[in-house]
Length: 387
Ligand code: NI
Image 1 (cartoon, rainbow, N blue to C red):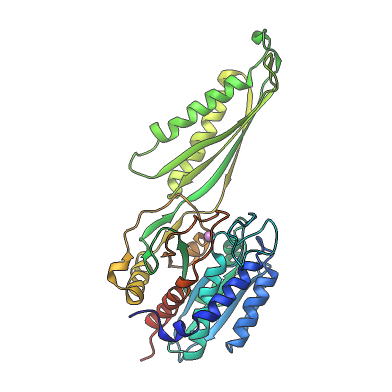
Image 2: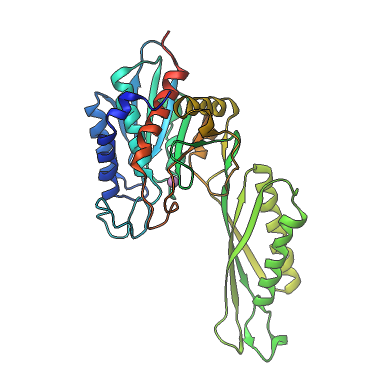
């Protein structure tokens, strides 16, 4: 079954919506105009059950199907990035320093396309909850919507989301059960020694030697404390200290990133880092403080919903175009909070050759909007069929 014909009919409308959003990017929780645009479209489609102001600018809208049944949640992100656009497109960002460089304008468009079709046809039981969230790119808008109770309030049983993927051919889908994207944590280490003359190190407690000791010892978390076949990255990415060739500084600063798929591994890293920082500091006679910040959790797909999403993608694009055993990636995604709250799945849709995500030359491929919208619509019609 190809993309739904009725959805293909309004591909031009979808392109128009997408390009309007592309010209009008908004950051983090400040998606006021985007949310207003979404609500206007939903009203045009005859949808009246619309709830605004969730997680500041998030929107949840309900489409009633025919007869009793569960509620399936479909999520799109609406926010852009603080990047100066370099596409040179006619529909380029009209706001300097902000652009849709991750295709969230396209994700919102695909969910609107599905909404229009589902509101028009209503060939499903139960209900659909359309979830438009702000602040995916920092801020964790999905987590805030979950904290504000959308799952209970709208009685959502399962949740699905989709992200475009540059380099994956148009019409192709990628998914896997279990970990799909990593948890992203940040650590900062503040070292306090005693500065002095570079020629008289015995009168100092050198924070540089302590910092390099800590950086070396941190490498052993992956190489010595961790089971080789599980995924884990620990990278030190910054060291700042010093001001001259003949001065031993007073302080040093280290920071870096940790990527995990498993909460037990994440806990092990936190415990080991705490012990290493304390032990190394004691051995070098300096004081050191670790500030470990947990970011978005790992995006973990549920097995049954993943199998169902893969089947639905096959129904839209054909067997040969769906890879249901793709590799996980070390990037992150705040849809993870929704997958911690409800069973569901996150899928990638190919957008063909283009600049990469978060690149100033990136632009969402409008050709994939009818395919993505068909996927969302079919997900609903196949999971909650009218008899
Ligand atoms: Ni994104």
